[in-house]
Length: 301
Length: 183
Image 1: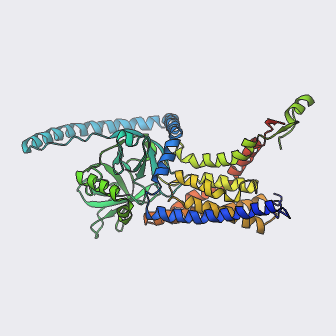
Image 2 (image 1 turned 90 degrees about the vertical axis):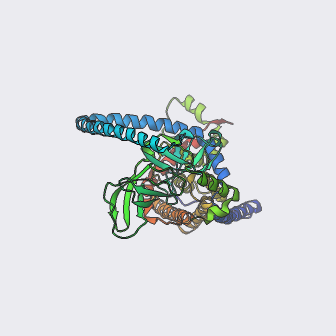
Image 3 (image 1 turned 45 degrees about the vertical axis):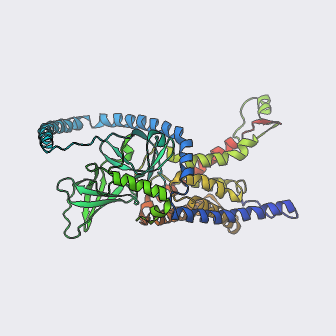
């Protein structure tokens, strides 16, 4: 490439001032940026209005993207299915037989459960989902893991509500605009989910590692009892997430926990469900935090 | 600039003479393409890891290197702000880093007057590395849980894809200068 032309303007006062002003504004830009950055680090919600307005503006784009994503996945899945049809068929046959056996035992367990609950007089509260929504975007090039859903306060979505797919937890709502909301995914390092092992209730918590994996950390240190393939579900403590939603499967146990992969990958789920926050106290706490503004939110770990 | 001439002399004369680029396209296209690249987070890709290269930033670098002086020096302020709306980074990191990039490019222009494509790529690689690293540091401050290793796959992909982005920008530059306006 040829050298860029000399930008010494000669005797033209107008050109000289133009260049000088350019530098001044650029340096002011850095200074203003630092000020905005410090504000947003101290108070992460400070610019949420601008972000939700921007998300609203880009919503049609995201919805078009979601359409093409499901079509594209369908095409790839159809092509892939031809290549391993035989193996898949045998596998599925085996799985169906196993599932049938499981279903029968589940049915008997459910009957027994209902009988026992009737005996004890427990009434199970019905949990109605707030909304069934579509994932329309994600921060694919950033270290922070957010996704955007196409429903907001007008459909009853509020910050703090858990978001799940059929196969597991996706994350929780952190900002809600009128027609879109921002979801903090489970893989974000800021999202800490209290979990227990599905088999025996061993308590732990899950923290995102931002690379599609998550860290499972045990609360009781000592000999690590986690084995490969252990399933962790939400424990319900903390009151945000209702208990029993699958979160992670342990893949590589290490000294004080394990690395795991997600039970529900947001990439595979076009439609997700927003549920009400689990307990009344948690809901009250969230409302309190919202009222107090960012002071408390920033103080939280 | 516009490739080999085709057609009869009359046609060429009708297409080329007394025409100039349409001003809206000539000045607005770089801005529009960078902003559109910022909105790539609304693409069909929903990812659970940072895999997509920072397309908007790469586009800014490519335009800046292809046409020095066309984007004003202060362009980092508005375009960085716009990128912050969609990137998910702590608000303001785009404004700071994009403005600093424009100033850094001035220094590069001063120090290395004659550059080939390899040197441009090298400068872009250094700037992209610094950008991704500093963004991850800022995100680490925001979450209190720094994860510097996470950006490595994304970084490698960005460096490899930079020439592709420059080709794309070169193509867009031809569109930008299509003689659409009659004078």
